[in-house]
Image (cartoon, rainbow, N blue to C red):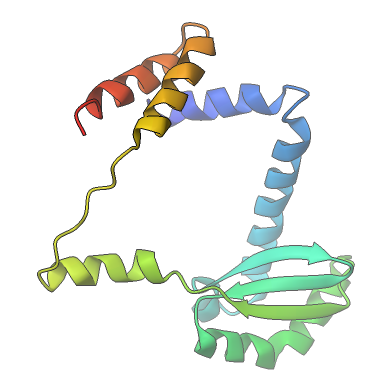
Length: 154
């Protein structure tokens, strides 16, 4: 399925009453992340993400302790910048959110460890099959059937 078709599907899904609020929150988070990335130094931007704002506390997720320490050093100026933009932020919390698996999978394969193929369980296959049965004829339904055929033996 091409990204255009996926985007069209998500756009339509986002207009349904059940998902409208969720998609609205997701779009707001993306916009906030873009603003956040413009406010922090570029050498830190690729190593952290904006978390949620709850009760005036903004959470920033850092890739490692060194990035967290740098963010902590600049957090007073960041707080002022957020407040100037009208964000209702009174405190900044910085958490280390290491992406250990994603970052260390490739080096393990380079060291001779075999890369394990992730297998879809029979329960997963059954659930996907049941879900596809409820869908009208569409690209999504065809893609699920194709995926299930591909993972039939295993």
